[in-house]
Amino acid sequence: MDINDRVYAAKKDPSEREKLIEEYTPFIIKQLSLFTNKYIDEKNSDELSIGLIAFNEAIDSFDDTKGSFLSFSSLLIKRRLIDFLRQNQQNTIPLELYVEKSTDYEAENRKLEMISFVNLLSLYNITLDDLVKQSPKHADTRKIATKIAYTIFENRGLLEYLKSKKNLPIKDLVNILKVSRKTIEKHRKYIIALVIIISEDLPLLKQYISPESEVSKI
Image 1 (cartoon, helix red, strand yellow):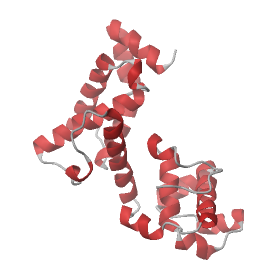
Image 2 (image 1 turned 60 degrees about the vertical axis):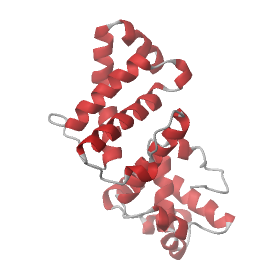
Image 3 (image 1 turned 45 degrees about the horizontal axis):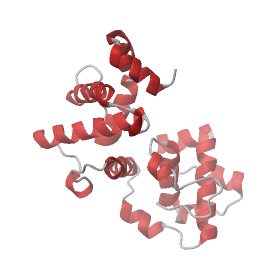
């Protein structure tokens, strides 16, 4: 039974609802952590309470016209968290810069995904301005950067190195891909951004990148 079918079952059966919420609590915590860019305490956290309530609300209001339940619930969690942060003046980033109240589900989802992306970039001390400045100007260079990013994503050791050290495993990449160290260093932030998009829960950004793509559009 896929997740959408389980949600419909949970609408009718309280025990199924409880099982679903318990099973997906790690997912809820991950969404909250990505959005707030901080550790979420599983035992004592206002944010987690907000997330659990939003996930339960998502079960009640979901239908197939809203697409994937996980994407829909992620959006609802972020909406409720925004409301909570505004009410408590705990904004860690200028939300109004990215989010405007909208009845357009897809448009708001794009904005909220961009907030998650910005927060993830900040873990590596990267800004959107950095990406604009470091984006390769030539298609061949963009293709190389995409190949490097997928090489990291597909190699567990390289990906773990990036996430723990917050830097590229340049020596290994030079040996594996025979790419010049200078090329990797010059486009370091751009490559890291591509890895973030590929490896994290950023489906709208991910659709612009593929292993075969000549151009990666951030």
